[in-house]
Amino acid sequence: MPQKSVATRHSPLRVLIAKVGLDGHDRGAKVVARFLRDAGMEVIYTGLHQTPTQVVQSAIQEDVDVVGLSFLSGAHIGLTRKVIEELKAQGVADKPVVVGGTIVDDDIEALKALGVAGVFPVGTPAPEVVDAIRRFGAQRVA
Image 1 (cartoon, helix red, strand yellow):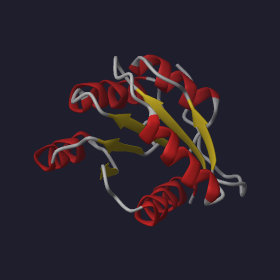
Image 2: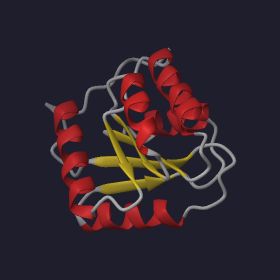
Image 3: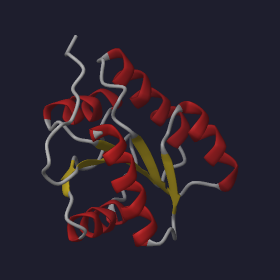
């Protein structure tokens, strides 16, 4: 089991953006990646059709500060649960998880109950996402 990492560097926040499951649409994920980069963050985009295990392995290998999951398919609760469980199993549950995309209001509390740090439905203003990611990443680094 990998040892739990604690970010102590003073370089830009590192954010992983992942498309988990069979969702084949990634335009929104790429837009979010671009505005996070424009805000000075380092963004690692994993591409389409990632498994929860692949996402967690990428998060560990890239030593990211925040894990972002993007959904359009409606499978966000089950797949997010699996990612969070895998982060715990690998000893890196300190990495905040955020979820964005087509998320209905009724699912926001369910995602937060799983341990999701932030939920950003379609239409969330870019500055709100950037500020939240900075806050979650800073909490991990502190």
